[in-house]
Image (cartoon, rainbow, N blue to C red; front, side):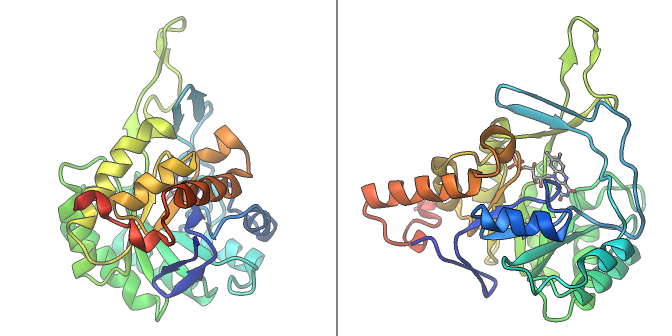
Length: 300
Ligand SMILES: Cc1cc2nc3c(=O)[nH]c(=O)nc-3n(C[C@H](O)[C@H](O)[C@H](O)COP(=O)(O)O)c2cc1C
């Protein structure tokens, strides 16, 4: 019922662990797969090891989760040693990469491709700058990064991960598709701030952070909806999916894959299976046999 074809990758269901949340070792990848995820995205990797930002880097309340972890993690070289290869795990793995400049995106992509992931996701929504402008907000830079990553990834499909922090996400998606992207992942977190009124200071040491979780969902659904009207390539709809009804909403906006990150914070590691069960219940109740029947139906 939930089987999904994403760029010719066969997923048992459309749920995908979003990047940055638990996908850091072979063991954690297997564990997420066993807990029902259709695919697992690794933490974003660049050419070097990064310590990340000063604490506190995370804060969650009600339906808001705010983080400024600052892309901590091992570099691609050490990940290559740890993972060995990515095509012999029991769940399809999406390797997430980024660079500080266009050439580094290309170099890290080539190394990631040698691990044979099912897909390469390109985090252009990271805080580093090239030529003074963030990649995610500039269609020309988006196209340059997409082209070099495609060139260095061989036959592995490439998804470009977009940011909601832009004036017009459609033009960025269009630039990525034109430059050869096979899919779009939408979205990364939205910039936000929470102030501790007793301390009279922002709660995060970094002051601002990325909003994820349920508060992000309407923004994510709007982005997926707009991108679906602009490009023909599939979309991995990500942002605030916590329940099956959220995933159905994403599919109706036009998503093929469903990214889930912060949902683990609210519902535990079993969130993938719970979301899938809830999707199936809704489908049975509404006599929907396959997700293809409702994909993009909100546009009609
Ligand atoms: C703690 C944390 C770390 C994250 N790290 C990354 C990352 O390394 N690369 C990336 O592309 N996105 C990263 N993200 C963004 C998520 O992959 C996802 O796009 C975003 O959180 C929205 O989905 P969600 O509401 O389901 O969490 C991170 C999010 C969180 C909360």
